[in-house]
Every structure is written in C-alpha cells, then in structure tokens.
Length: 165
Image 1 (tube, rainbow, N blue to C red):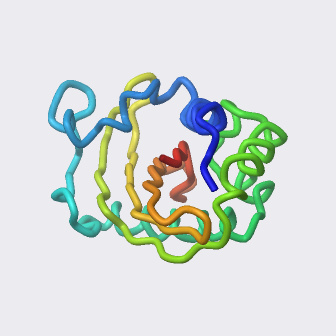
Image 2: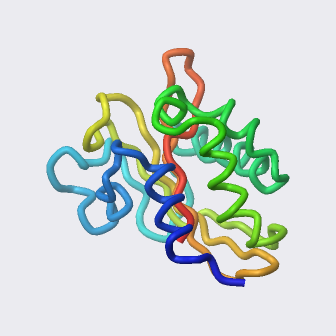
C-alpha cells in the first residue's frame, strides 16, 4: 500500500510545522553550515554517541511505540509544547490515521543517524536531536522516519517533529 503523495506532504507539513520549513530534514548535507551546526554529530550510518543522542533516541523509540500501537492521541499528549502548538490533537490524530495507519504493523526499526543541534531554523536555541530510522512495515518495506526531539525545561526529551518518507 502506498502513501498518497498529498497525505505524505500533509503529514510532513503538520508534523514539522514552521519550525523546520523543510530545512532540517536535509541536515546530512548541511550539518556544518550556519545555524544548523551540530553541537555534536554522529557519523552517517552510526548509532547515537553522545549522552544526549542516546537519551533522545531512547525517548523517541518509546514515543514511536505509541504511534506503532495506534495510540495517536497519547503520542500527541506526550509531544513537546512546540509540536502541540503547531498542530491540534485532532489534526495530529487525523494525519496519523490517514498516513501512518495504512503502513501496517512495525516489522523493524533501526537507528540510521542521530545528530545533536543547539540551533535550528525558526526555533529557539536549545538542545535538539534529529534522528533518522530505517523502518519496515507490513505494508511498506522501506521507510525513513525522521524524528526531531527537543530537551524541555523539565529535562525530558519530547517530540518536536515527525516525518515519514
């Protein structure tokens, strides 16, 4: 089953909001330039190296498990205030229902990259980790999930963006 291109774009726009404006998802090519300069960066194809990358990756995997289980409302509730401010819970649930659910059950997910940043376009300075996962689902064998997590004032890593490609 294929994701309708319009659905894909809708989810990408909703989930990344104005924060990333399509720029952060090209971080591999531009990681060292301007405000996209990573605080520390894992080499392409490597697992998370820093404590921040490890913590954010662990939090991301727990958050993704909510989505894998179809618990879209809880995934929104556990997301950052930034993501919640960018998309309503209803819009999030609708986007996940139309774009994520058709992929079917998770078969496998492996961390492809994890990179730390202290500044991202359109976002306040802070601690961010952008991760890419190579993922396989029952109805789509090869997917790249790009997830951005941010460190909150409470010391918790929370989702700030999610893109399925």
